[in-house]
Image (cartoon, rainbow, N blue to C red; front, side, top):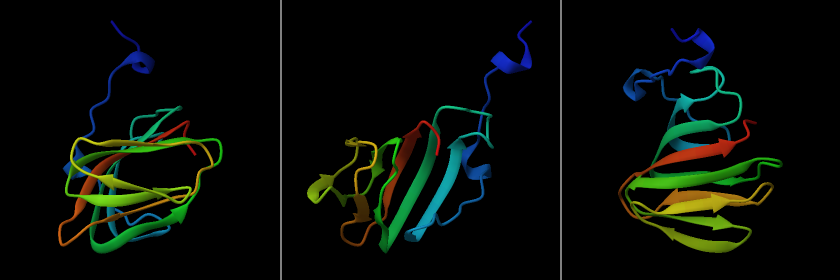
Length: 120
């Protein structure tokens, strides 16, 4: 029998209360994997939806790798001033400490998985 320390943990996304993260507008983020949801110690994973007119304002995360996997919608991101067009099934990696921002393009929400490792 497995001890509690090595057991898997299931998180049902709709059961997580969405929050608008700091430095974001018109954004809903649901924590999927982090220290609070499953006891993770090395990674954070979120389901994020940025609604039209919203954005993730310029930010940086020293000592933390960061990235997006686009599920639905289109958007644009900037990493250290370089523009990236985001479409479904695209991944964008953001190195530790890099200035970055993200927003939907057009009238559709941008839905994505956001990761950070190690945790902030």
